[in-house]
Length: 307
Ligand SMILES: [Zn+2]
Image (cartoon, rainbow, N blue to C red; front, side, top):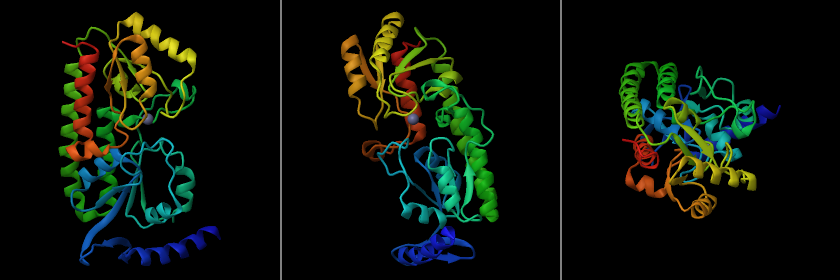
């Protein structure tokens, strides 16, 4: 009953938004009345990057979470839900999106195609989210991301079979780029003065596991969790014991706690990006997932004093 009412509303809003159904897929009319191509929606930035690289010009890929907003506590509006319902495919991480179970229930069963980019990926449990919490930050391990790229390409080929060769070629190129990043990390972090780094939120377990590093996070799995005083003392102790000279902070979250800690320990702060969204500055610079991964490597090499 509820679903039926919702989809009556979708039809009305789709007309208002200028979304026109065509052969089962929906096309967005541009200002000039031309077709921009079927729309794919990704839940947040890294998946938008992957999906748009695989799509090439066959899909217009947008992200649900607006630029400059961190995705952990973000919730879609009813209008977002309607927009997703008109897309050809919806690409998501599967663990970051707490709203996902309710959202999927509210979407029609046959559209958009659900693309779980984490399907089949081994996950890391635990950390401060609790022993059974899945760490969602799979996109920070370039090797796992290669598998996500294959998943996205296979899904797009189901939505748009005539584009299958394009998707496969784009995916192969992207996987090469990811393999290059993996090679740079492996070589660049091989010989370092220390292997422990201090981060703002617990985003780097997959990256740390891949390259034999250890993260110590000030905050938990989600950056809005306030650190306990005991946690601050623990971090100061880690800085002392390891001789760390850097406390990392991230672009989309208030760095006050990291800054206070760094001041207290007389060490510097640097950015280690969890790549959860691009800032306005990063967008203006033309930064992408790949360039931010390279920046992360440079900053890790400085912090860990790697040869
Ligand atoms: Zn995070």
